[in-house]
Image (cartoon, rainbow, N blue to C red; front, side, top):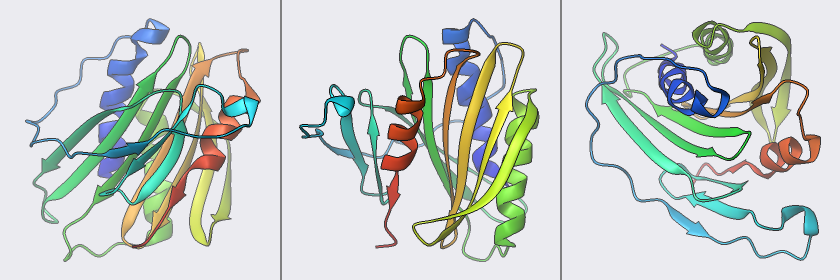
Length: 196
């Protein structure tokens, strides 16, 4: 199924203006957007200065981001029933930050490990990248894959989580040779999902 990936491709295409890349995929009609809640990050840690803690109640997650993300939500019909994809995006002067998840029809049954691998593979294919590395992880008790992909001018680091029946994907994309490891780690390590 891997519908999260389709939305991430579209968003990367829209976000890639930062990297002077252009994609023109078609998008289905959007339903009304969800209303996320946010709480500004209050910390004395200088490495988090200027970032906010973004919390999505409907998404059941929180994460540090450089600014308030934009929200895109789509519901699409499929042979396995309707599914809804949620995506949050921030673009700064060099990086693109993405977080998304999919809610599948309750009757759709899938293999969790296969779904993680399919999201990774479809993401890499969708951005016309080469898979550089991949490794299975358990993060906060959840099955996950972490991977790195590269295009001719950008690196994409991603983690795909399976939390209950929801696949989540978190991605940072940046120009080659311009990785800021502190920024990548701050973004990835701050991502927390709650089942309830």
